[in-house]
Image 1: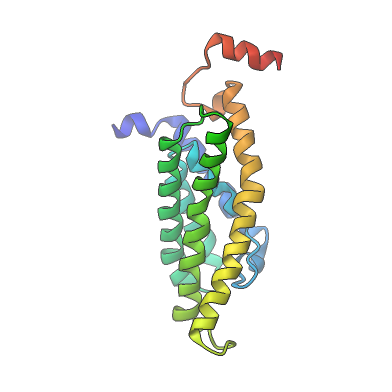
Image 2: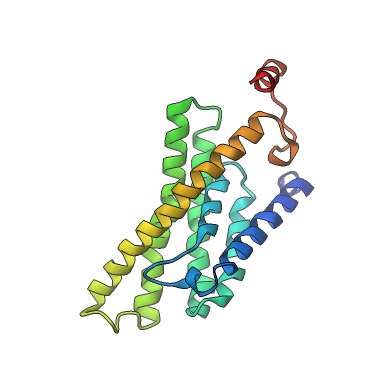
Length: 201
């Protein structure tokens, strides 16, 4: 079973996803770890488990490595990465439940639900780290105000990266798979009629 899952192509793809997550996070330096306004476009990659199950461990490892630079180091590396792992696993489940062969309405639902998990997971979990583990409430009137301020901020910024950047990424991968490009497939080929129609389009 593991041999069938961990093919050479999937291992390579997982490595690329993890490396991209780390590179995109480090590219924005300290802005990637700002509590109130988190500039983290790497979160767009959280949409990839809809296609690739190997993206689940890849995002987890990538997030762990990226969070080494976080000012909330020990908490962000372990707790923050576990939030990414849980969200990626749920997104992958949506990918299995709603196939990419679904019609337009199904595709919209697939992306909407798939992206919801990283948005909500980060919005709920990361403020817990900032407020309760790292004294992030000192500039607020109360812990409650601090938590919900961080929650709303992360909800907005995570939605931006997951949907505004993640949806174009989703459409790109979907198109590449429909066209039969090998790096985006697991040995599956389009039926000849569909492949011909794609080439004509």
